[in-house]
Length: 477
Figure: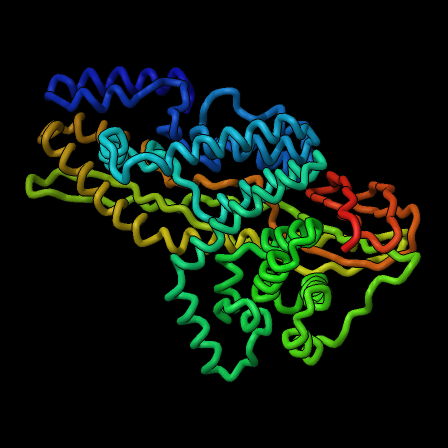
C-alpha cells in the first residue's frame, strides 16, 4: 500500500472511530510505510519476498543477495534462514554461516520460552483482529532440518568435518522428533500399502521405519539422511553411517546412490545377514579397484514453491440491517510445473541422478497439517472483527464502511515459509579413473581431482541458467 494512502486511511479511520470509543490499541498496531517485526499489515510474506524469490528462481544469486531486506520482515528466524541460503548460493560463505547461526540462536530462544507467555498471548489476540502475520514465526520441523543441513554444508565447505557432524547429529534429532510426532499417520499409511499387496520396502525393514511411501517422503528428508550417512562414513563411524543410509533408503528405495552406499557400508561393517537381503533385492556392487575413485554429486535443482493467497469476501448481516464485509484469506500452493534440467556431464558423458527429496512435497505436507488450525483461527477472526465492529461503529454507516475497508485490507494469509530452499535434490555416484575430471552444469565447467580409492564430494545447486559448484575430498570410504 502506498505511504500516502496508508497515512490517509489511518487518519480518517482513527478520527472517525476514536469518536465512537474505538479500541485505541488497534491504532498502535498501525505503522505507515514500515514493516512490522512479524509481517506487514497490508501484504503477506510471499508478496514481500517476491524480488528475492524471483532472483533465485532465475539463478541471479548476487541480485538476490542485494535484494535481501535491511529491515526485519518476518523475524530473526525466517529472515536469517533466507539470508543464509541466498548467501550460500552467492558463495558468500562467511555471511551464510553467520546468518544461519543467528537463526539457530533465535530458534533456541524460542524453544526455551514457556509454552505460553504474556507477550505471545497478546500478539495472538491481536492477530485475531488483524491477521496471523503479526504472530511469532515458528519454523516447522522440515525447515529446522534444513537449518542444520546448511550449517553442516558450511562446515564441510570450510573443511571442518567435526563441525559438520555436530550439525547432522542435531538434524537427526529434528528428524526423529518429526517422525515420532507423525507416527500414527505413518503407521496408517503403512497399513494401507500392505492392504494393496505392495512388496515391503527393504530400507524400511532394515531401518525399522514405517513403510509409508510418499507419506514418509513428506516428513523425512532423504537429502539430510544421505548427507549424514556420508559424513559418518567419512569419519569411519560405520554404525552411524549404516543407520542413516538405511533410513535414506526407506525414503528413496530406488535411489541408486543410496543403494550403493548401504551395500558398501554393510560390507565394511560385516553385516552379512543384511547384506544377503540387500544383494537379493538389488544385486551386488563392486568395490573400488586400484587406480579408481568415487565421485558423489549432490545436485539441488530449482526452488521450492511459495505459498500464494486465496481470498473470498463474505457479507455478514446483523439484526439492525447493517452489512459487514469480511475477507477470508488462506494460503495454498499452486500446482507447480517441474523444470526439467539437462543431465549433468562428467568429462562430456551424461550421468544419471536420482531424487533424494522433494522439498515442495514436504512444504505442502506441512500446510496440510496446519490447515485445521488455520481454518479455526480464520473463523475466530471473523467473529472477533464483527464484535469489534458492532461495539464501535454500531449504526454509523461511515463507521461500517471504514471497517469494511479495514477488514479487507488487513486480512492477509500467513504465507511465511523458507522460500529460497531448493525444489528437489538429487544424488549421483560414479566410479572413475584417478586424475583430473570436469563436471558440466548450466554451461559451467568445473574441474576437480579424484584420488586413488577415495571419494570426492561435488555439491551443485542449479537455478535458472546458473549453478553454484564446489567440491571436497572425503578420503577413503
